[in-house]
Image (cartoon, rainbow, N blue to C red; front, side):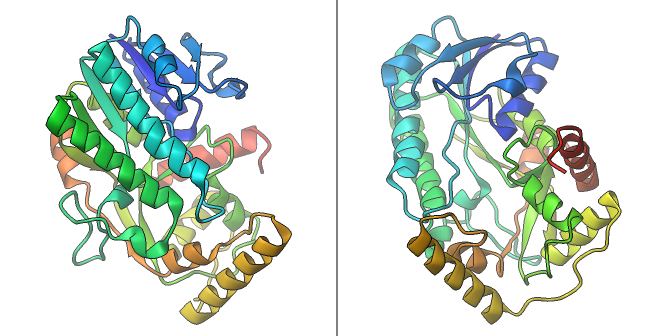
Length: 327
């Protein structure tokens, strides 16, 4: 099977590429012109340079491919409202859908986000049937990914798009070159995290998420969504796990909600004045006080999603960051 993978040079995309190659698939990476591809340079893959905002580029890249995995997205969270984030995530996804339909692709896997669905707490975690509830944060990334999700589902229902949707939670693992989630590990390791907020997240090894994505090429049902997650942890709990893995002291001070919100508001205000991205935005300070817990039971049952200890993902991320001199 030959697969076109958009976003192949991203954190999850790089891990997906390696998982697909390990299964003997042929991979063609759809790469934005001019983007660095160091994480892919040692891999036996094809590369196609194109613009996700150009439907014809995607159509040409699909020539000879049997399947398509759409992982490309703009994940920027500053500024909170952004036309380019919306354009890439919504219009880019519409272009991918249209190109896939035109090319007669046999299978498409769209990679969304777990926050497309309503989140919950320990007693009532979020699942694929809960309606979107993150509009309250007024963040373009989350809103645009939800709108992109609707574009995909409409095409499945009304145009016969042979697509299933996978929705990862918060991932740890290697090849986190920004770093993105790895910034949390760097912060704890360097003692830059003063305390913990009252919220939490669902966490998964990025390699386990990549397995779930690859499995979706042959498992699961068209038109269905599957949350790729594992363990629900408060920030206190995840910081303690990171500290144990990296051999440092865990942040031990609970941060009052009002103080976190005030800090986020202050940082956002200063950022608007200086035009420099803040360490913490006001919407992120609000998110950090909520529990974004989910269940991945559906993906475990139907996609054989692995549930390896999150400590493995932390260790793999930490080792990669050290080896690549991020720490």
